[in-house]
Image 1 (cartoon, helix red, strand yellow):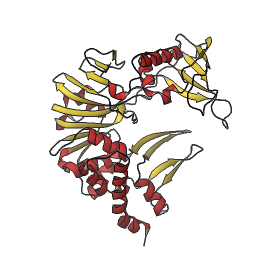
Image 2: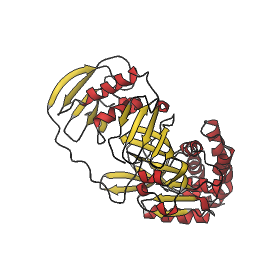
Image 3: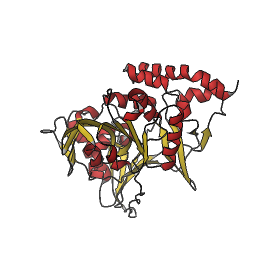
Length: 396
């Protein structure tokens, strides 16, 4: 028996096993989405995927790999990198098949019901469009992606499975006005502010769910309800999630960065240097002051050893480097050395955000919300009328 024929015989059991796995993980509770995950052959929509090894190199895996290994990953709660762009030594991820657990969690959060018309921003492999088409019928599903090749490939593969949603190539921020209104919009991409076109294309009581990131890693999933002709409001989902940035038709230019300023301050800090990764709400609050183009990373002179410091920088030439004396241990109250330069003390802004977070009782994501109008979008804590409020740095 060939690998392909063996796969076609085995995938229904594997897909049903994936649905059961998502239930066990607490990601899936709705029987209708369990049925969709069990019915959609993910391997037909992602017949090959890329894996990055320990050295950073990418290798492609497809149906020529051992069946057990290949099927095991396709029908697991794993992200599958499906498209790369190579430019010299640089490799960027163009598209991926999202973790099924995150996908069904988002679909359940949107409370999709029979007869709903759903717009998906970010077609990718078409796997999510297949799940929604199975649940609602293809005539109720609309999906959009900026990459024409991805859309064309997804259209063919979906049709082979009997799914014929409306697919379109274009700028995701513009939505699909010619097919509006939609009862639900799901965006599998990150945006610095919710595109107002999405709100306009919702029905009067419609909902949308997207990943709001005001800077790298700063934000999470937020669900908005349309509350009027010129307003939408909602809260962040309790569990953190992250997607690749929404890419417009025209590739935006990189921000101009001034040369790093000379070191102007050297002091100590008790705020964990790994805050951009370990304390995501604090990093979110800090991003309002740091700005959208902050860069973060680890530094060290010896690549065979753990990193020696965390470095953050902004286009105005400001930078901060915070030592990592114990990079593999949990955060504690030990002091780390901070060296800063340029016109702004960046780590001081992170420390201020940490103190603000503590002062408000260390809020989690579910205590934050978003109010959106055509003119302004604001984040608030606890209550949209009386709680602290921060305006988004990026206009809708």
